[in-house]
Length: 162
Image (cartoon, rainbow, N blue to C red):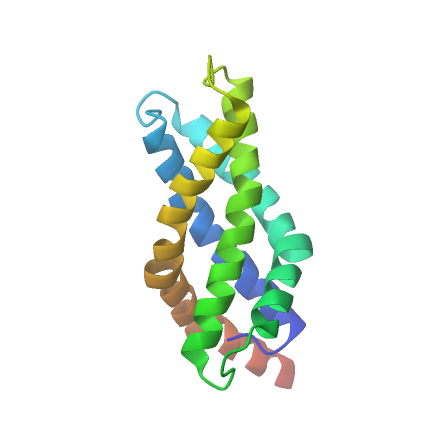
């Protein structure tokens, strides 16, 4: 887990990258767009969504999620409780914001013909949350923590000592 601001920054970017890749392809799949849009359009979506998600994570959702997660009444000495509470708060915040992005994207591409914006938003939130929380807890979170501890944390520590 990150212990410095620099480590927290790298960890957040890694987590964002992992979640953005999976969630982008999940949303393309659920909207039936896999195979209908070009690789160039997919890459453009990935870059745009990564930038938006990173800014949200760094400046709004991340700080707020940490504040909420650490204010909850649980034993913070147990790493698993900290991970689950942080993941729940981060996923909740990111899903609420990024579903707005998805709704806007669907609206401007004409995919919401005849659907209520509010109904579409809540439908997106539910679908994204149901996919994102297990994804975060079971796949992306453990993978990013492993990569972070193995490659980044050691490099930052050894890099700062030399």
